[in-house]
Structures are given as C-alpha cells and as structure tokens.
Length: 506
Image (tube, rainbow, N blue to C red; front, side, top):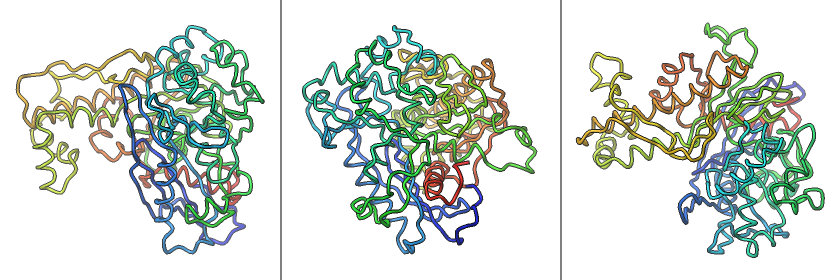
C-alpha cells in the first residue's frame, strides 16, 4: 500500500471484501498494507443445466456480512476508515425496486446472478461478433461469451416476460456490492470498460447496442446499466449507510470505494511491488515490464502500457481500468484451478489420494507434489510427462485464440490407473496451463509489450509446483508477494483511497 499522507495518526484500518467464484473473503488491512485479520465463507452455486452457472445476490451479501463481522472482532471500530469491494464479473439482475429477478427457466428469483463462467449465450455472442462493430477492437477483436452484452441478449431472447421486461437494473457484481453498501447505483470504470464495452474517453456507443438488438438499454441515458461512472477507489455518496453498517458490523458513514473486478484487484495488489535488491530483470525498469497473473478458478494476465496496444485475442486496451493513467491488456484462461480440480477429482484413484493426504494432514495437492518428488528420482520433474500431454481448453480458449468452441484433450494415456498416473496427469495439467500463459505472453510481446517478470497471486500461487512450472516454461522469474492475499489487499487499497488517507490507488 502507498505511504500515508501524514495527516492521520497511525493505526487506521481498511476492510477489503473479495467475492470469488466459490467463496467470500474479507480482510482487515493496516496503513502499511499488512493483513491483520482474515475470514472466509463459502457461497452457493447452481448449475441447472450444462453451461448455465448461477448464484444469488442475497446469499453473497449475507456472506459479506458474516466475514466482515469476523475480521473486525475486538477492533476499535473508530479506527476503520474505509471499505473496498472486488468481485467476479458476474451479472446481477434486479427489478425496478432493486429486488432480485430470475435468470433461469425455473423462475427462481433467488438465483438472480449469471456467473462469469456461464456460457449459455453462445449463439448471441456469435451474432455480436458477426457485426464486426468497432467496439470489438477493444476486446481483442472478438467478444467473449463471458462478457455482459451476450448475456443480456440471452435474457431478452429467452426470459422476456419473467426477467427482461421487469428488469430495472443490471449490475456487474462488484458494482452491486458497492450499491448495496451505499445506496449509490454508480458503476466502476473497471467493470464497464472491461465487460460492457464502455469507453473511458467516449462513454457508451449507441450504435453498438442498436446493431445487436439491445437498443432498449439506451433509454433514460442508459439508466439500467449505468450512467454515473467513477474510477476505482473514488468515494461513493455519503459512505456506508446505517442499514448496511448494521449488516456488516462496521461504522455508518465510513468511506466506500468504487469497486474493482477481482482479478484487477489482484493486479493492483501486486504489480507495483517493491522488488529492489533482488536482481530481477524488472528492477529499474518501468512497471510496464511486469505481468500480473491472478490465478484461481481461472487465470487473468494483466499487462499495462502508457499507450494503447491492440493484441489479437487479448482483451483491451482499457484505459485506467486498473492503474490510473495506464492502458490495460487482459489475457486469460477460462479454467485453471477448476481444470486441475476436474482432472484430479475425476480420476479413479482420487479416493485413495484423499485418504493418504488426510492421514498426513496435507491437502491433496501438497501430497501430489511430494509424490512427484518421490517418483522423479534423479531427473527434473518436468520430464515425467514426456509421453503425456494435456490440451487445457476444456471450457474454450479465452486468450490468445479467443475460440470458445475449443475443447480439452489428453494424449498418452495408458490402461493403468494408479497414484503415479494421477500425479503425472496432474503435472501435465499444470504444465499445460503454464504453456497457455506462455502463448499469451508471446501474443502480447508480438503486439508491442515488453515483459520481463511475472507477478503471481491468487490461490494457485500458493502451489509451489504451479509457480515453478510457470517459471520453467515461460523462462521468466516469478515474484510472489510477501502478503499472499494480494487480491484482498487490492480491495482494501480501494477503501484506503476512498477514505482520503491516500492520494490515489497508486
């Protein structure tokens, strides 16, 4: 975190809340950026049919309340100065009175979120891409099915009576949370620029919404999707409302910041790290030589530049979407942690692995890493997969191929299904993900980026095998933050900025 301005006594705290795919987490962070307290709470997901993934905004808000109350237990609440949210770029649908609306054929309003990884709108995104509209150049030339425009079009075409005609507000999940805390329906520049085709310089493009068949969103100056747009870290309204303060266990009136998407909060939390004295290639170089890789359920690859760089198959360039004054390019892999879980948990000997890991009081992945060390003998661990290879696009390719129709593949399988086989399949999956990162870096460098060092954060950055394979396969040094919960620190930075204790998120 930045150095305090000096007009506050030391000892202030900031709360960061991070809503990931499967859980809500909160942290209490001090002025030095040190995590003082941490809590997490799982949240429900529904998959009513293939490629449909849904959540509940009421469930998520309730989980936010649980974790914030936990992290401030025993703390003098008067020392808490600000609150920041980040979340997945999922779509929240509310009616004109801000009540949940169903995003499903079952008509269940409790499930009012289309999750970021939902791929129901394949037909809609194909039609959007066929328009070749000029806004598409800012998403790598091809819009992803994971963005909001195709999901909105799907709702209009499939749930017109039960959802679309009743809808009053469509929020990105991070913006829903900041609204819930403040009553201010402003949107973050991060969400709108990265997932909604908004331009930081020109605003909304009427012609795009007309050509894709969503011209009704233009009404009332885009009131349903946002007409007040603020930079991440800007203070919202009069701060935390009394009702939200009671829910969260925080003081009413503390500053609440305009939000960030979760990956962007992670990027903000690590990309400016002080690495002097370690002999890294990026030392003494501009921050544009760094690539932040936020790796959890999926992975996002954040690179910034002083001037716009257009990278085919890589989202952006987005102006000031993460770091003020810089253009952002965002590569990504739709499933990484989720893919590793899928490969390991679906294997025939997974129950045996679970039992052995439990007996050693280890996670299954710590056990697999130890097992790989045993079976590699004298050769480097990477050579164990000389005959086994994974193509990792089980949920399509986000970057740099931008092809949602691609499928996954494994070659080199044998009839045996023992623990050695599972460990080697796990290794091959991790390697495949790292090769995907290398392809993204190569595409970004071909377009004009100059990247020398990777900065990893997120759940997978805690796995030493995942980190080492990224270093080996990209040929680049990997930096891990001393504070492992970089995404939460990024969220807390927003709250610190909104409080006025810091001049900007930088």
